[in-house]
Length: 105
Image (cartoon, rainbow, N blue to C red; front, top):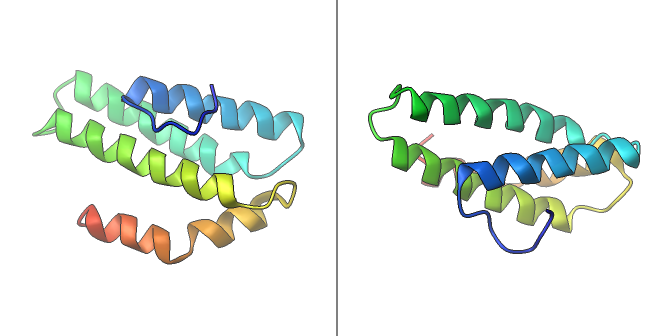
């Protein structure tokens, strides 16, 4: 399910994060740690949307999908087989700060 096309909905995000986790396990890569945490959060966001926990569920889904697309783009540029260190370097970069600032966080 890993693809260069951005996810279109929260279910695709969950599926892609699951793929990242599975690949990371196969390669003994620690890059799957963030994906595992993010997947857990995304599943909770989905449940919150379904249960009406958010004032604007559609906006929350867009936020999650947009962040996932940016995360996937950054992860695709991260050097392979360098474990979590490479992922954290790219995730702590200016791009992540921009993502959060655009989200109002």
